[in-house]
Amino acid sequence: MPLPAGKWAISRGPCDSGAPFDHDCGYYEERCALDLVSLAGSMEDVPVLAPQAGEVFFEGTRNDGGMTLMVRHADGRVSDFMHLARVVVAPDEWVEQGQVIGYAGSTGSSGHPHLHFVVQPSAVERECLDLKGLDELHIDQGWAVSKNRAWRDLTLPDPPALLPSWLPTLSITPALSGGQVLLPARLWLTPGQVLTLPVVTASGTDGLTLNGFGLKLAAREPDGNVFTLPIAAPVAPGVYTQTLQAMVGARVAGPWVPISYTVRAASDTSAAQGIIRINPQFLSPGNWARVRGAPRLCWREEPTASGAPLRYRVLVVGPASSAAAADSGWISATCWQAPDLKSGLYQWKVFVRDDRGYMNRTNQRPQVFAVR
Image 1 (cartoon, rainbow, N blue to C red):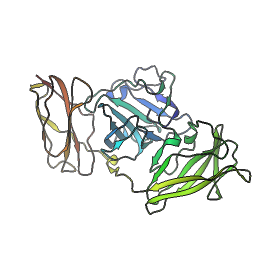
Image 2 (cartoon, rainbow, N blue to C red; image 1 turned 120 degrees about the vertical axis):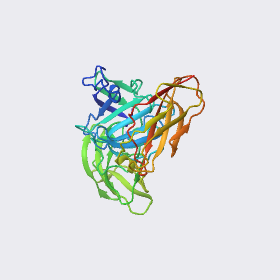
Image 3 (cartoon, rainbow, N blue to C red; image 1 turned 60 degrees about the vertical axis):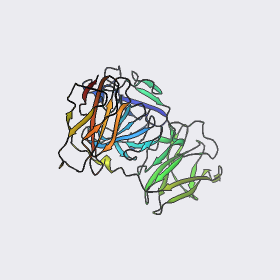
Image 4 (cartoon, rainbow, N blue to C red; image 1 turned 120 degrees about the horizontal axis):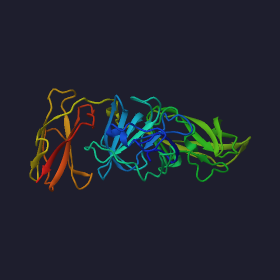
């Protein structure tokens, strides 16, 4: 699941899935989709995690899906995440399973903060995959359990100013005791960044101090007490450490607990702010043409198109699997010689990137050719 470990609600399930509410069956990007929300509060600014390792294939802002991120995995499948509030990874960046890639929100045509999650068999096919085997999934009952990384294992890059206070209480395992303090594994902050971080102590703790100063109690939960920790990152890059200490009354309840954070420049995620409305014209081979083993693929786009000079990426998928049969990488030419392909039907599509890093929408229709 693309969310931190714990229990989550499914506000809309796949088309005809038996969920209390489901998605429209008419469009491939929705037929298999899950809308995920929190059982404890607003979904705004909840960390979104990579469900598997892969390459950041697309990021941009669409009218419908809002801020959208797509991760392409080694087997060719593509995970789509929509309505994000923030993206924190760069185009073409390789991400690991469990890595925070963005924060959930309500951008685009969304009535409330949620994460719209769908998996496609490839970046070329206009299809989606049934979401089976995702940790613990009860679509008909409207809930799921994620077994992805827990709060204590997360690295939070460029977190929002105010993270949800209930986040750390999702998966307190084992139970906290004594002067223990539950923190994320790492914080990566930008120079001068200011935020409020929720931290949890054992239920019997009355107070929490930062460098000797008392912190505000946000909530008393069955599994622990939530305090809010203000952090103002220095301007100079480096690693910084402060100390926390749990209190019971006026008595110190345990040893000092260090909290460290790294200050560094943020990844360039400016490509997530826009999109280009360009779909190249396919020239050859013609749609449903018969070709021999190594086709030369050509397309056309106006040289004065927005954001020129443009770069292109050709993906070809074939009959054996959803993994790409051929991938041009990013090129400047408008023709590309594909490698030898085995006999069968293939689909291909051209993706476009401009000089700002903006990409075209990925849902244009592919062309088909048959290798004899």
